[in-house]
Length: 221
Image 1: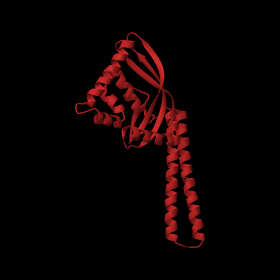
Image 2: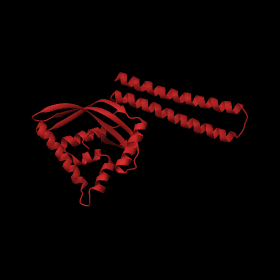
Image 3: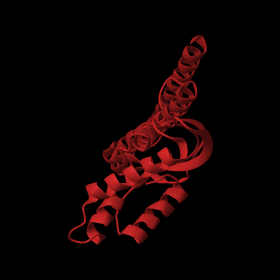
Image 4: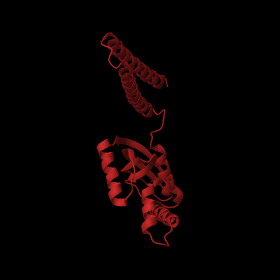
């Protein structure tokens, strides 16, 4: 706990010092401008203020992200996509169609509704999928299936890759969405039933799309 607190204080101090450095730099620039010729002083002051605000904002975001990474590694806060993975494995274990649909990107369910025909029932579709998955697990492992998982590794995808995924969604589903963030997550899943148990490693891609986290690829959605 002392180590975690020390890490937090160290990063907070870094953020504070960075903010002070940015403001000091802005003050020097303002002082330098006053000592020179006074041409459109009002415009220069506004431009300088806007630049300083932009620099402060960028610096705060950068150090905030560093702090979040340290706290995640220390186990103080959850990873941003953790709830999506939790919901996903709960959906598998309990054959919960509602949770399974929640983990599925909304543009996929919209596409199913558009292409499924007049009699298509999206809720019934997910209920069948959830039941089929549970049947599979029970055939393989017996009754009373329990599924647990742990994150072994992760890789945050680049902006270039996010743009590529956005275009892929548009081309495949005709959906205009914004992929804000995504991770490839290496998962060790353990499945235990009355008859058998096993563990397997797989990679699942989780993505934040229009403000919400979903299982994008690599799972059963």
